[in-house]
Length: 588
Image (spheres, one colour):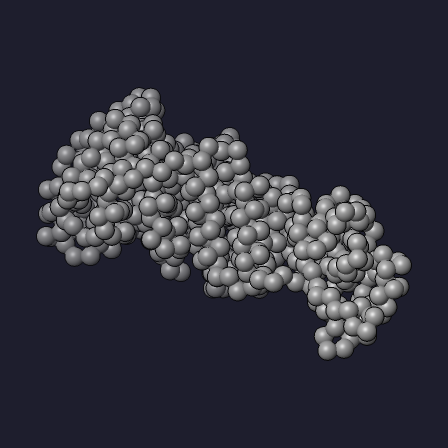
């Protein structure tokens, strides 16, 4: 048994196989179980696709092979699993020649790409991490583009949950980062993102579609007024139909961004910034999967948009200082101020100075700093860039004497400001709309002011006293990973990152290291948000001190939330080992 001829492996005389019932052939890429049952010969991979246990120990009855260990059941004829958590067993061709049994040396599926994409859908439908992991690996190996996997997952999430979810945010954030990551981290990014979408959809109410208004011509300004009105009075159906009408009418991504930005700023800092962040992530998702999917993806953000509470409904925004009244007073003079600034100044260059000014301990000087920047020619997108940098500095200087949950207060402001900045980068230039677009900046600035206590006293940023740390890039990256293996390494991890950047090493390797550190954790969705937002915002500043501080801030937040149990990382590793043909029950 085992002689290889023309791609076939000799098993045994048919009479011997019939007498024994089953035999294991070796010589190809995997051991092959050959079974004689009810007058037929079947061959399939001897490794149970669930966890790799040998199937030749199992029981055969009525055309069903049952694994001896976890009792997964397989159809002998096709290898199909009757228990979806087990996965299908690859089969091999059987040849009976001159009374001898031969089998193909390798097992497989007739159409691997189709098989693995179907398994991905089943893994998501039943929220089975092991199946999702193997399906991601199998699909990519079969040549399925990552864009197709992402689109399948995003549309699954849009159909099977009524509203945008944390999983959709994670999926989009990680898919954005994945192209710059090594292969292992790229796999983990897709696994983590798709798994989280599946988890959010499990036992959730599915989405019910609305449709666009039919007939007539709908002016963009009218649709914008309507959407703001439906947001104000919390009318979800009307909001969704208005948005779908804009999409059906051919609105560009920039025009849709302007439409939704106007509605999202009806309330100040709605749902602690999540509304704007989710809208921005839906746009980034469509950048990845294709804007032809806008009718399915964009409406998922409407439920949160119309139901969210704003700062005007919270006591902290009204007492002891009425921040809403200050915002309204500042907002009233913005149209004239923007017009004068555009006429009198060139391109704005004071982003770094404005970022520091926005960290003032009093609200009025913050608003005054914004007004001064507008007078110097700052557009809303310039203001948002500085605001995002200031919000990152709040995290970089976060005092660890604060309660652990306070990290999220700082995080929310930063991800809101990043989302605002990204959306403002999309909208078409229109001086007449500058004041409306700046409303989100005023909201973000006051949200940043409300977190000032997090820097009292401020944590010290890593300085130039880092010579006790290695200068080698690999050693520093290893040190960063090691710091995430221990609790309370916020300052140490930040020092390692600062040292790495001060030595002039490429940011790409550092980002891959931070991604590796995060992707092995059972992290909350805020951690995935902050890594992607931190990478984006650091990229705005090149290699300057602002980029250093933003990456330090990102690292401090991630380190504060590590380590975790890493259960999902274990599942992802098992999936990879099984896909490669390993046996999980044996030693590595």
